Image (cartoon, rainbow, N blue to C red; front, side, top):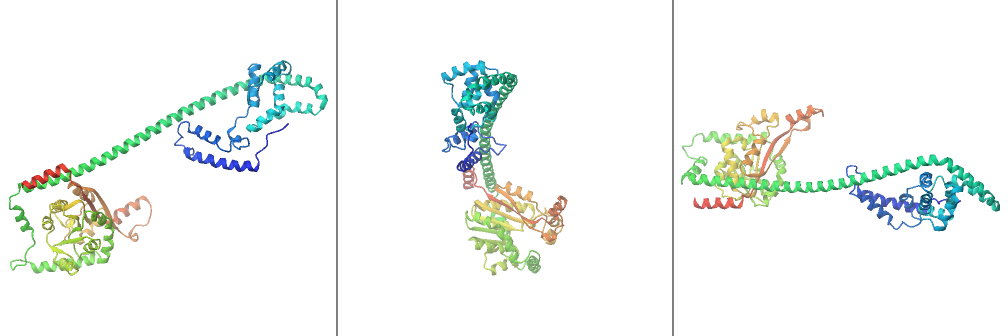
Length: 520
C-alpha cells in the first residue's frame, strides 16, 4: 500500500513562502490584537486569498494547512445510517467524488455478507483512493490496521481468492462487534459538529456585532472630533467677542470723559521736570544709582539675564509675523531690548529710573524716561506686535497693573503678544523670602491671578511659562513622593511668565466700536 509522500525540500521552501504570506495577512487583520477582532468574514476572505495563491497546485504545501479535516472511522462507518448513505459518505471522504453506478451496485450487494469494514478496507486499498488522499494531503491513521488483512492476502498470489470468503466473514464479524461503539462515536461526532457549527455561528454573530460596534465607534469618534472643532471655534468666537467688548468699553469711557480730561490726565502722568521747585531730586538720583547696583548684584549679570531671555525666542518669532514694533515696560539695563533688536524688531524702552535710562541710551537704545501708563496711552491703537514687562508687575498697585494690561491690549495688533514675567510664589522660598529682597516689591502675583487678568482683557491662548528652578544640589536627596513634593514647593521655578495673544475682535462689534469712536 502507498502512503502520501512527505514534503520535499522544495516544498519546505514553498511552506516558508506561504508562512510569510500568512503572517502578512495576520498583520493586516490584526489577529494578535485581542482588543480588536478582524472585520466580519475578513478571515474567510484572507483564507480565500491564500488558496488562490500560485502555490495552490497539486504539490502545494498549502494542502497540509488548508485541508485540516481528517475523517475518523466512526465518521466514515456511519453506524446509524443506511447503506446508501454509508457508501456515498465513504466515496466523498475517501475518493472526493460520488460513487459510480457499477461500484454502488457491487458494494451494496457485498455489504450484507462482508460488512462495512470490508468495503472500507477494499476502497482504501484502491489506487484511486490513495491518489486522491495524497493530492489532498489527507493521512488516515486507522488505514493501516484496517487494510492489513487484505494486504496480507494479496501476497498469497493466486491463493488470495481462497482467502476472500474468510476475509469477508472476519470483517463482517468485526463490523457487528464494533457497530455499537461506532454508533456512540458517531453520535458524539455529530454532537461535536453541531457544537462547532454553533460556535462558528456565534463567532460570526460576534464578528458582525464587533464590526457594527467598530463602525459606531468610528462614527462617534468623528462626531466627537466635529464637536471638539466646533467648541474650539466657539471659544475663539467668545474670545474675539470679549476683545470687542473691551474695545467698546474703552470707547464708552472716552465718550463719557470730559473733552479735556484725557490731555489733563496725560499731563499729570508725565514724570516731574527738573525744576528748582522739585524736591528730593538728589535723593531720587541716589536711589536710582542704588537700584542699578542692586540689580547687578541680585538679578545676575547682563550675560546671565540674556541667556534666560533666550527662552522667549519662539514668542519673538510669533510676534514678528504681526510686525516689528515692540515696547518694553521697565526696560532696566536693556538686555531684552538688545535681543529684540537682534531679532529684527524696532524696540522702544520705558523706565522711571534715570540711571537705567542713561545706561540704555549709552548702548544706543531708544528709551523714554516716563511712566508706563503714560507711555502706553501715547501709542495709537493696533500699532505694536509685542508689549513686554520683566519684573515690573510686582511693583505696581493692582489698579495700575489692570490699566497697564488694558492699554497694552489696545495698542497691540491682532495676533500681537503680551508678555509679563514676575517672581513665582508657587516656590515657597520665593513667596516668603527672596521676593522681599527688593524693597520696591509690593506683593507676589500668582499664575492663576495673572492668567485671569489677561483672559479678562480679551487675550487668547493665555498660558504660563515657568523658569529658573533651584539647582539639583539644593534639593533634598531622595525620590519618594514626599521628598519630591518638598523639592517641588521649595526648589521649583523661581520665575514665571504669563503670555497672551491679542485676538481680532468680531467684525460686527469692531465696526460698531469704530463708528462710536468717529462720533466721539
